Length: 112
Length: 114
Image: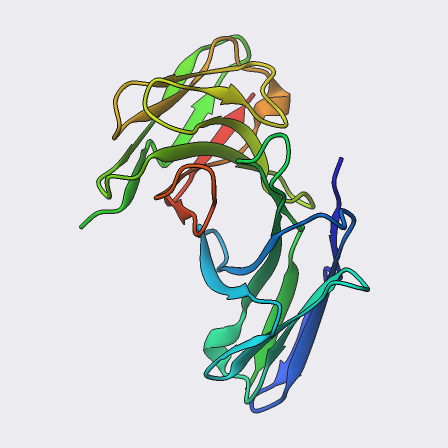
């Protein structure tokens, strides 16, 4: 089974802190990468796609390192509302091309 | 615009009972999916439908059947529920066939099998 590995946490950080999550994937042929956010007892929602050149959306920055097969998510100036579980998601275009592989998630708690 | 709607939100079954989880999307998406999420596990794909009229097995299809009733609706059936099927079930849809740009999830069904 293709693997996507994440540190489960929890990461407990104070408001205003910068926090980074890493995720490693096993299939070097993986093509697309995403970060989803899941609030407690809610459905996952797409946070951002991860592009080869890296991308930024406000306080969130995603990076891809294909050589080392990991992606990262950096959150700057953490807010209480950032508390959630962050899911690393990988898509492979080969057989079973409709199957995304989800990591187990990293839990973030932002503390006042 | 409701997005992806799942019913029911909660369900308790006894071992051996059957039930159908309903899912509908109003975004004119081609592809639809059923996932389950268990504590300490990532979401795992049960079945998917790349387009109307087609269904395929995912990673964990045993004990489930699906029906793509039309472009909007994709149902998941448990014929004889087992305690191992206690889980949170999510339906999802995506707009494009052959490339998953973004998944839109329903709010989930918490299923307990006693």
